[in-house]
Length: 497
Image (tube, rainbow, N blue to C red; front, side, top):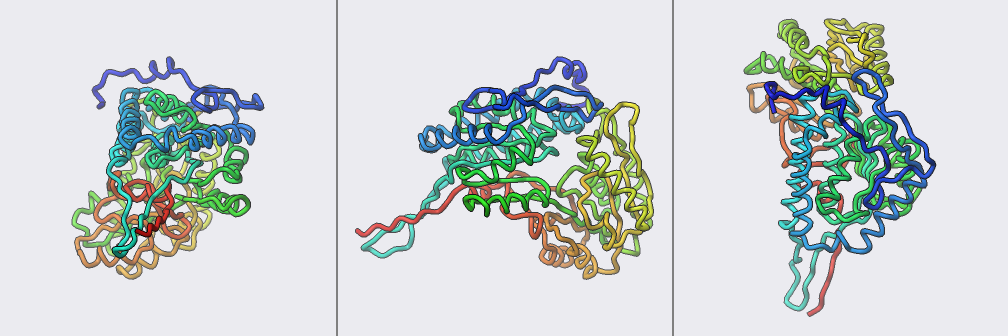
């Protein structure tokens, strides 16, 4: 898929159909209450459709279906090579339906169709295939016992997993949770964000087509304060795996304590420091990455490089480069293949980000470019790529997660100060360092409290490396074989011979 591909995305969008009901036990059903909510497109503010509003009763039905499937052993006890076939088939179906899934992502949350089609959908398929391939290559252990005994260390699935996923990468975040949970034999209840439920509902349908037994995957769209809370408090949910804000992540910790002490895995907010040393080998490349690191996906990325830390001696010249590259990220129509950035997910997030921009100006930060709404004539929710200079660590825009196209620029004198500023945050999701000095790079990588540190690149990696945070960015890891661990429990078996 490239810019020359003769696809009229607007025509495809006009002919697209939506799955709008709750998915329980292998079929679509209305909400028990009969209630629905509007699903708006941030592209132009219009109503795409109405989606069933799942609530406590619907969560109860979904969890009961998942529990029944798990206890029956229809998936849990299936031979690993058979479970492998299903996940590999799901990966194939994601690719076969790539255009449809990409359109659902773009219309539902506002990202450019080029990103949905070239990044989100292929990476979702790759994730499903990766965990499918892993299923029949995982071994239990035999302990180092003496000649008169034998010990076995077994990994067993937890049971019913509640996966609560965000709106910024709806399909990909769902597959990051579903694939390892299913690979280890669990049943899953998926709650997509209310802002972006459409691809999750289509994914459930594809999973059944791939051969997943009914009840193993259920999808309950709805609001966080109703469906999300019900999952968090449910006495028959064995684990919640959540990606979203730190504020909501803390709710799930509370829910676990108030209910059955269910496992909780959290991937929460971030305030990534993007550090550029004066000795960086390619300052142009660093500037391109500084711009892309905050403006990609409209800045709605948990590990967005929202704090740019630049060594004092090069700050002015380097920031000029960044401001120039920011002009390449002016928002366009999400259905235009050539658009590099699109719309904010909804009016609330649009207003929230603009509020942070005003806060930055009020606290004394210097606005270098952007700072306002864009494409207002469309009815959509667009914001200009925005760069602030003269930011201090005490300012709100340097401390709080904005989740929008807003870059805060700070300066440092040496590597020690850069590390101190980088760590001066409640978050610890990711960091990046640009330097040609290997010692400086490794010292920074070890000293910065973050789950991922990129050297002379930004947001690099693939499905084979774990992703997650330190501090209030959460705990537990998605991606890689390490993700399988959190969906299983250890059982020791001791045998006297």
